[in-house]
Length: 359
Image (cartoon, rainbow, N blue to C red; front, side, top):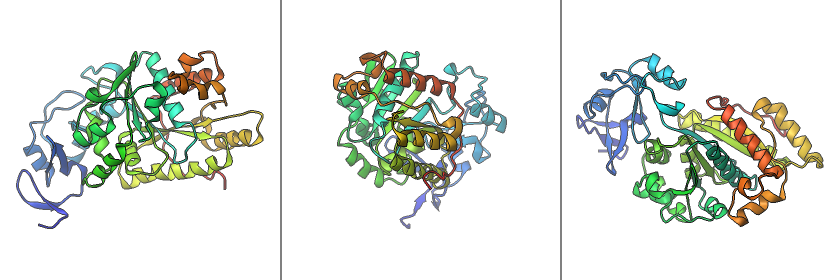
């Protein structure tokens, strides 16, 4: 049998994998299905995620796979209802059919305030009564350092050993759990590189195991890495912090091209939640020009800026969020405004398009 061919677990026919539903991981091993009929043969009768009706699989749209647990739709109407967040089975919290809202905080460029944004966004959402999981997808481990925690089990153990997020996440505040990372994440990337579905491992590991959360926030590394590909394939929307300088404006184009590639090549529709101007100093000409350029191009997807604020830089050294360290500071007020906006933007992310920023 050729290296690019696999034996169907139901009928033993050899075939080449072309679709996501044809590969599943069960109990630490991969199983393969050459067709929807064989997939159905290998599973119990599916039950519609939306209406709870049992049915026979006939069409590809009826099974959405890639997460730890497949999602089933008996009719196109149920699939559209799930996309709109409408359920006849009474699912609580208005969560999407595939679990909590999943926001990646991402930019290729370093020094744009990604970790500060991820930490304070997650903390702000938790203060609104939501259950939030903050995932550190950067091997530098800055999320844990910012909050003064060090998990015994990290994202590495979730990816490589298949442990659940509940086993590894550290409760740090009311409603806020953190899945930390450290230098072992580099070894996890080597593990990912050897897997046939290497860009979807994070989605499979977290997919069905985060249903107790309302929001998952991912702090991504400043790189175009396999780990970031996993984060973007898992996320349903992306928040892009952009520092108010010329080079960061150029970097926005690369971010948007990456998101379009995720959609075109990895077949995952991750959408733009917003562009967040950071390190904004109204006294600085380039900062004002950068904010104007972002507003002109992105319209209402350019969020209110985060002003330069000494308290924001000091808060991590005190192992606190900005809301705990300096609740009346400009930093706290600006991140409160961001949390308000993110709550209002629920389910309203924009499609990604190319940018002409910075010529």
